[in-house]
Image (cartoon, rainbow, N blue to C red; front, side, top):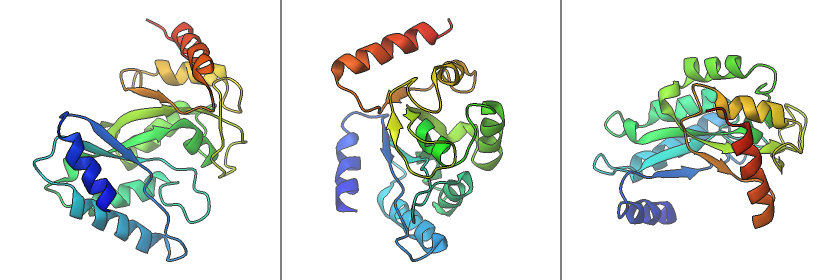
Length: 194
């Protein structure tokens, strides 16, 4: 908690940023307890005056991880005090949601509709763009390079061009070196429709 508090304090030196974090795990205490502890930490750390938006990242749902279902993130947000709730958003990780069972390859619109009904697209502030080494629903969280996993290049093109997503910031978290990132960025530029 001290590290996150320090991070949020420092981020105010460059106002208007987003602070992304993995919500955490309930480590056997149960989802209800985990959600309560995460919300309590956010209530203790976020101030009404801050300009930084804290982003809960979608997770793959492995083990006792919290955030593998949209409903879990919604429950955390609902427990954040109303006076600071506008400082909380979501970062959608493509590998994580795929590994968590959401079909972003065959039904991206349906997944985004579910996200909107459950959390609200207004809370979606960023995308971690990663392919996955796993089949959908594996709950393992193993990132792959763009086009080299089970999500694939064609689906990545639909994701980056989707009207609800295309203007959000996208971040690569793929297993790469600088040359590999350069190739992925070029591939994504070529997939991007103007």
